[in-house]
Image (cartoon, rainbow, N blue to C red):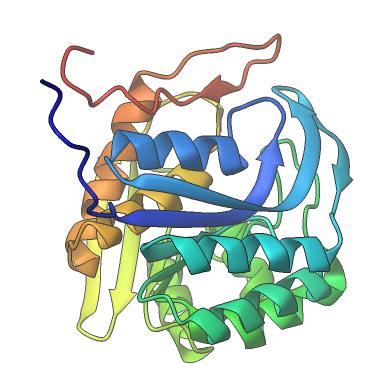
Length: 273
């Protein structure tokens, strides 16, 4: 006899981001990451991109009214334990998302301030930068910029680990309670150092640098942090586990397209892989 289905709602994590038609980043990477962490993935599409392993060829931003409808639908029916924010291309989109977060008050918000694609394409309108600083940073539990994104937010160059530490503190001063600053773009080192700055100081995580060009690492890291927070891990443990997860997914990465960009294996850490 088949046992009755459980009526306990699982923990859900909502990604509000852009769709990657190439399947390596954005919503697609987020949902794979959620699945690998055993949480139910929800998605609200804030942008549609035409892209592959060689670049972004077009971006379409749906009407904000439709984005708002997606957000309300998710919050009204699911146990949303955490929200991950990705590509939000305009000030109007950012304002719509900020209002939804203020309306629904999710316990955890992970902000990945997506501004520049791996190919170098600009994904954030100039007018949206200030809106991101003033509206989203204060609503985030943790913000996860890479170095070029942090430089745009702050307006100055980050050249070494000391500057990374100063930048993380400066981003917290803008209103973010915690900052996980990714060091993958820092030149001249045999390892990648990521710095988490929070109210208790700093936590540094280091891994050997992998000599490859990867796609979707930022999306995956932020999604892994959100999934870990939704599962009940404290922030420092959630971030450390997420960095380890991305490193393993990079080591198992593969090249599905004609370009040299590596797409992460999101299930590399599962048993039997």
